[in-house]
Image (cartoon, rainbow, N blue to C red):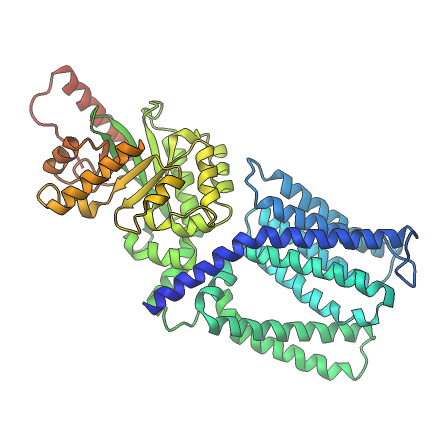
Length: 538
């Protein structure tokens, strides 16, 4: 229970940080805009704040554009071109001073250092816009370290310029922090937050030592390697190697030393990482049948791990691990893309009543780029949003104002249908159904398998169907295995069903064969050329 509470607490922290990321970025943008004004006035000799000639406010403008790009990348766009273009322009502007330095038109170690920092920030924003969260984290951390080291040199700046420089650095710190909070749902930061206070303490130690090492080195170079600084620099670098390699690297390499994570689970995490790289995850399909017409009206896409040595790995063995490690996000995107590509090949998919259902993990819903990825996949595969149903577990539902709420509504506004999976097993709150755009409720198989003999399960099934009818929500029963269960569900006006009674989950080729066979038999039944009970083949 304690471990579960810690896990929920970590997820709450991650949700909160992701939610505040755009606000942090826009605050950094505003500070950078203010420093741009100060530097610009001094450069134009309208209001001098430097004792020496000022340079154009290139770095301030770059940080301002980087923050704007990061803010826009959180906003749902049908295309990511705008934030990517702004971040690219920011990088080009940041490179102006180094290029002038290479041309011999400008020479200053400080200028080179600050330009490196703003280039790293711009690169981080570009990586965020192209969905490379871990690389963006590395770039942002390097920028923060250099910012911290440069602060030690502010004491040597002209008195009038200290305020403007500090405002510039504060804006840069906020923009870098915005990158980290924007990408905290993946990579080393996610593992550190999820690991508990010990990991945060180790990270703080390593971060402090790295900052001191870079700061001492920075001051040594600025003072032309003064003899007094050399021993300090050597000690700092040795400490840096010790803390980073022995303390921080386990989190960067996925091999966390945690008493709550057994070696077998850590091995699964590593295997999943390799499976993602090798595209070992396949998509299987379980058909859904409409009771009223007896027709095939869709299929649910299910992830299957085809291990090269162990064969098919049960979802129960890797889904919980993938959710804990955050890898379920990438698995979900691979399954969704493969399912959309396959569905476009189904000959019966042109029927307006046929839909493709794909599961969305609660962890995946927390990812701030879910909407953008779904739009990207629909755009590249050509699947119409109206043909897609995204299934959320009941425990993943969120209330108004919580992270993920706006994403669900944005998906609905695209034309995508929302289904609540495993309904009745979680936190069942009718307020969720009144706040969220839900089109389908799926009766959990734990109730269906007891039908029709178990009175409580039968009452729950009737109540869910009645609730759906009152809210104009269609009901899908999952886990149907017998003809008696099917007849009971028909009698209470359930809309659709899926389960082993119709078919087990199948690969694309087997599903197409099954669907063709099923349609042929349905047509023969309808025309009266087949007598007796309907037969389904698994």
